[in-house]
Length: 428
Image (tube, rainbow, N blue to C red; front, side):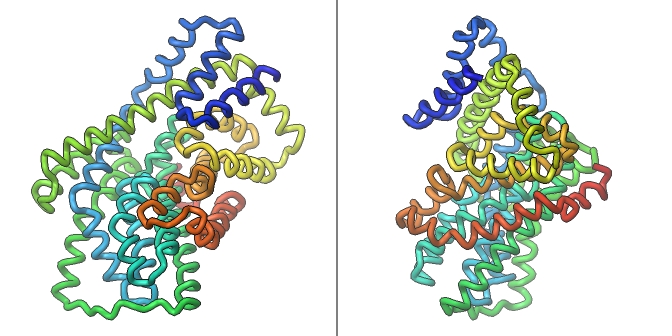
């Protein structure tokens, strides 16, 4: 137990002095290997075995597909469609922001990328229209939480790898209902704010020809996530093959349909993909080494005995896990937290007979909330930076939206039947 406390303190100290999470975890684990009389050769071996898994190949493919779609004009088409659907209500730009996040999240699957891309298009325009940059930034940051829920989702892919006991297709299907529920909850908060502040409505009218053009352009964008998810769920392609399909489709659309994709943009997308993939793979590698060391030290057994001594009720266990995830999510980014924690807690959830898909959704949504809560809150930092507003003000305006997401999290945690019916319908 003493070595575990030392490991945790060392890791937290390294993170506190601004060492990147992956390096902090790697250094802390290496020191623990040495202290525990394990050789550095064994440490290097565990780093390698963490990467020696074919399923990891899907991660760069998903990242590249999202990057290519982001740079191929698809976002503008989603924006046109959202403006057509909800643009004429009071506070329409806020609703557009949320709806675009729901649609774009199904293509990109990354909350931070969602905040950056949509924020660059909508935050300034919304701030100018309503004279409230903090509200524009808050809606952008909080609506980006939908991205990791609506498939295809990169965090779900990472969770499925880390847990090793859950189907990617089942997770994708299970995320649809909670993702839509979060979007509706955010729109409910927006409706209340719009009425209270008397925000104006967009009076633009569309001709039948314009509606047809917008719907046709939207179909081009919406078909990609449908192809990827349907292929995985239907068993026609593996997640890795689905990522390849997404890349080919994004290239065809970008070069021959929207004609906004250029060789320079493709190079930039590939460069960003390499950088993001390197970070994820480094986390996977050191996460495997740290998990091995924790297992050798008997930490899973200690946690199992600790939780079972506190409660034998699965609902209480899930509640405790949500509290733990919310706390950890305040300091550690979602993907890093999953790679570190899921290999330890997923088997524990199985001992409580918690459905693996249910536990996966609870994990993804709980840790996603950390993206909009200080002190880390990456999405809040990105949105406040684009808006040019202090993050404290943006967070204050975000509180009602965070409360709405938390309500959906409670429903997901304690009423699993509200969303598990969909994967059950397809046999998962």
